[in-house]
Length: 352
Image (cartoon, rainbow, N blue to C red):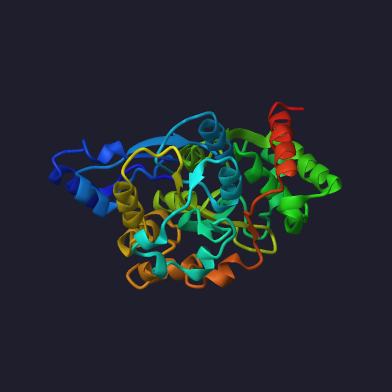
């Protein structure tokens, strides 16, 4: 989900600011690796002379455990399926939409996702949305042959990678076993079917990735043939002239998600500075940057007219309703089922 360079614009902005970050880095953000890219928050850099201070997590499970143990930050970047759990744990404070300059411009399909608003209060500002899907080397597997079930084929031993995240893995397994409709509340039988599938895939797994850059490099080198990953990995591989793409046939299985920023109850930085970053992240220029440079659709509808139209159409961002239709949406999983997923996934990774 990451890019290695920030581009000439970001470099010139930093130089122009004279590396004056004393004010900017008082704001702390807990995020996925790569989202420290100042292309996402150019007006914040202009206003504060530099970027916030970033700490990174590799999965939402990891992030929740660290935050629940007392780790203190101002903002964090979960996806909508985690918000109810984080709120119930007392980690969040609600957002004041009157301070969000672009709130009215955000796509209604994204703002209405479960977890954004709970009990009449807004708890997450949606930022980006996209797919989790099977990315494969098109020079090694044909479009006709590719399927989720192929990940368990012994012919691909050591050639597959999954994210090191239980909910992510079980979404894949639910799709592969025909249980996507019950992903958030599987029966014992459906859970066993999903777990059995992941056990069949495990011998083929070269590694469970925590940073998508690791997957990208292994796909580019040919070490991997298939990986369950996000849009940006596909775009990164294509830009590096690797013959690869994501399987987008909804009849074969693909997932969708919405992620964004939450204001932590542990926040100590001024509210004005917190909303300066949220407003920078949600402005159209930020949306144009993430669409064209990362391959993710943005929450702000005003970003689309100013972005590359071929990219928008190629990835289906022009019709959010169609984008979600037929896919498995990452929604909040039943807490008891989530606990089972976490425990069983650790057993599967250990070879049991």
